[in-house]
Image (cartoon, rainbow, N blue to C red; front, side, top):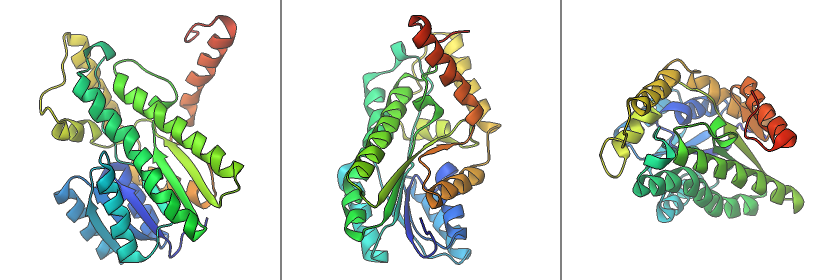
Length: 275
């Protein structure tokens, strides 16, 4: 897909992977609508991108609410007259074992991480099809390909994103739509998703834990993120995938060996993972 002069909408675009996407898209000559729930970070991101010479606007948006996603689409069309790329990137996650996740946290993580992309597809796909051009990307995770421990609700939501995007891409190709889809499955990326998730968590309480092991697991997740890939590198990877109409966008492809072991175990004896 040609990106120069096209319009991109990025949710969760004020920091982390979303801001990395915005920077990469700006360098490729795209116009940007950056959406985020954090108004202060959004203002800072829009200011940075504006100073680089890109045409950019910002919109506060809670992707778990359909009416706000619809308002984001309307604001984009009002400002730019079109939308060619949608990156459903906003996400939250708390490292908590399945048995200890509060029901309100299940709902919150699934509302943001899965319903957000669903609302994005529902709202923006008809706009793109009327234009006859477009690409929809969604941020899943390696957690959407295999379910590690201590991340129950996050794993469920991210598996749902992979299912959403694989089905969407097959449906688009099946009816010869000009729109393309892709899914980003990042590994450890140097972002503050865990810290931001705690800040925006509806209950405003610390995640429920009942053992020292669970507390260590949460600390280990953030430590891995702190040493992870630069979000700007992820942004360039996503840009390249959109330009080349790739579907699977993987930041750490060597982790797919876990998938291979899981498939081998399934075929061999029905166990979860061999070795």
